[in-house]
Length: 356
Length: 276
Image (tube, rainbow over all chains, first blue to last red; front, top):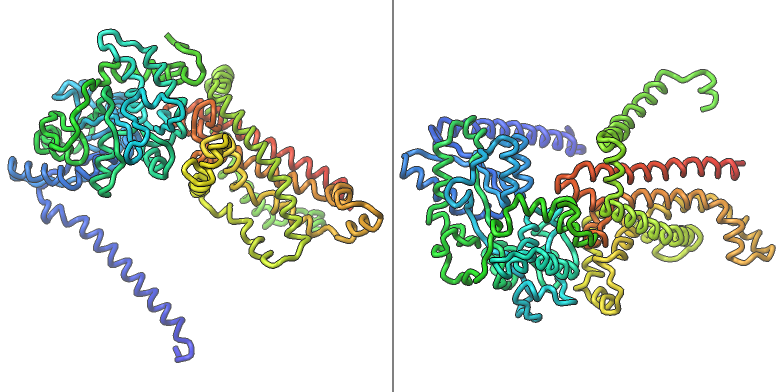
């Protein structure tokens, strides 16, 4: 311990101190994990939410505090949230394989249907108000500043030489919205007589202009922001949320005829049964569809289910807005368009209608 | 070593052998066997069907074609680079030698990003090439480019040590006997080098068959155009067709394994020919 060799003992002492700190802090964490049960959250209701990433800001910053206040006013009880945010497909798979979320907020009906198939969500989840929907948005075309190529609608993306981006529907469930909007716009030109062939031809021309198919919508946007391409097919709420976060945004056009994006929400029966919190879960779902929550969703870039709640500066809804139901519903689309030998495969193989 | 075997293996040898084998089994053999069993479980017909699916078949063909082109370039350029590193003296050689392994240290996604930034349609170089019909990124040449980068060190690093061992005197003798540089290389140097060139190319080839991170950034991922095997596998897993994914994986794996086995045999042969 002489003056000549101060480093070794010092190092050892600091190591000991570090170890002590570790033990103390882990002990404290353990303690604090116990505290809420007896402290501020005594008798609180707990609600576990499994949501897709895009709604995170809206939920965290406004909707969850809003619901907590609402619940307090209504019942005098506190509510504590456990939140998880992930890509919609991944979140759905996580819940299906055991993550005990009480409420699932996802971006695709198919991701809820996976939970139905796993026996976690009631098959009649769409019977409630708004057919199980909680958010809406639009498929739009992101363009370069000033829209130098004067892109206005889907037919403009057919023009030779236009570089188009959207993700691969094989890896991005969300890409299906984009692709459905493109073929749907041509297919439903005459609403009375849907023409799938016309839709196929438009999609083939647009697909021929596609430069790169990223694995997710986010990556597609990133590719566009890095300077690739003239147009990116994306969701209006993505672009508006980005504007809210960063202050700058990709300019976009809403085609005259485009698809309404519908985000579902469902109660996970097995979880609420296990947690005994059905009352608060149902109240939360109800709150999500009330004006207050709908205004918040709209503020974060979505379209409110009732368009009167949208901010006044929002562009008007397009004239010929169509829905998944008008295209035949997800079940039929997944089979006829994205299934084996479907429309999507036929775009590349040229062999149309491999399966009836 | 030889006198030890004559006495029979020591217990420590047996122990080491056992651990090495179990480790290999646990880390490599078991997962690969499980994969193969899963792929073949539904039977041969579904296997064949999944393999000849036009999208799977094209993805495999593209993977092999791009890997093959990459390997040809790497064999020539890698050998030349190793030659320069061993036989030439110049300032900055140490740095050059150190730089060679950098591609192994770069995360492959970063490789992809870097190539897009450099050759992508929005870059100066990329837009120039694109205007002249030589688009690289989001086209098949981009795949070859990414593969070249990620497998860059293999040939160099396997040729370099062999080259170091070759006595330059043999080459000088050939030169004094009137052989030109090319003849000297062909008749004297190459016969000693080819096993190591082969090792390097085979390793690059195997590496390229499975390359995903960089390729997905630069390829464009368009079915029947620029979607490679690993990208096809990823897409099929994500879209709920694990069997299709496993069949393509098994084919890629089988080829990698086959290449490495053939390589081992060839090397053994090469050693017999050149062994003293």
